[in-house]
Amino acid sequence: MATVQLRNIKKVYPYISGEQKKSRKKNDKPEKKFNLQITDEGVVAVQEFSLDIQDKEFIVLVGPSGCGKSTTLRMVAGLEEITDGDLIIDGKRVNNVAPKDRDIAMVFQSYALYPHMTVYDNMAFSLKLRHMPKDEIDRKVREAAEILDITQYLKRKPKALSGGQRQRVAIGRAIVRAPKVMLMDEPLSNLDAKLRNEMRAEIIKLRKRIDTTFIYVTHDQTEAMTLGDRIVIMKDGYIQQIGTPQEVFNHPANLFVAGFIGMPVMNFFDAELVREGGKYFVEVGDFRTELSAEKEARLLENDVQSQTVTLGVRPEHTDVSDAGVEATVDVAEMMGSSVHLHVNAEGRDVIIIVPTVDMTGNYEMGDTVCFSFNGKVVHVFSKETDRNLEF
Image (tube, rainbow, N blue to C red; front, top):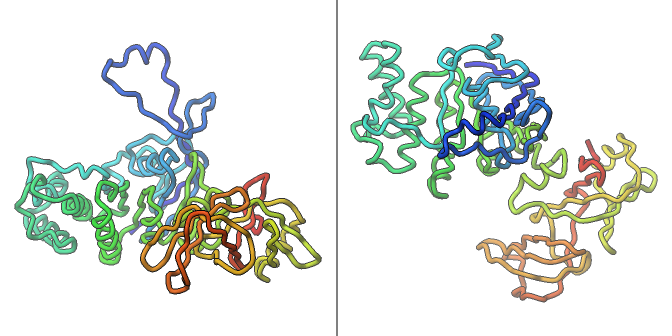
């Protein structure tokens, strides 16, 4: 329904003067900002944010608490002023356009339903404000209710619904408007694990049934990986990487992305990158392996020389073997189809995923094991910049 362009968007929260602080009511709690840059202008929540979102694309903003993702979403919605930069929707700059005139709908984490209204009235409320004919309101509400499988709850009030049902109503209230852009701010974070899984599947079905552009905020990488056409990974107000779920998983741009995407988290080692002619090898302790031809080609293109690096290897790509890096077992977690083996190697905590079909016995605390990995699955990061040396 709409393209969205964010051009060098910046958000700065000005300092509060001493007099302003004194004038606050005693019960007012100051808004907390985490991991944010402090400048002469104030607290920088979002910095140099640029992104082009295509029509009907599903974009996920993901990152730790305080990284600026919700602030970015609120600027798109018009709930936060943009300090600098341009927000363009369908070719029109909307920085100073009122939220109600942007043709955007937002689903909040807290549902924000009217407790005294029925589900039907909650969903119909915005349409009534537009003085839409009653028969058209009824058609839109019932269509949305059918899509979300909440038709049987239309006469109930929110207090009679479960958390998952309330979130469906909140989504329904948004989609009846047929907005150009649908914004979702951590809509599943209040649900338990089972409901989150169910609602993720519902959102995937929903985006196939309604023609709109989605911008979705979450701190949950599982949601990001399963929902997004592209993922925008943020840290401290800056974009760290933009790409498809597969791209950011297979080719993390830096150490932060590598450690943030993937579960369990990636293993990191102090290692040596050795260049020998047109070949590259990595060495961890006494273990040495050659990188894949694809990785060697990228390193050669960047003229990367021998150096000490941080080596990243995912637990699922780490294999218990007869020879390799020696490690001591700390904990063995049975996960059903696999065992997550927590070991200490080269002064680091390392996780190895061992399929149960490959196990010949049990692992006990204090056991000595060896593990290895091949050069196709490793990631080499600069010690100085934390950047992936391949890119």
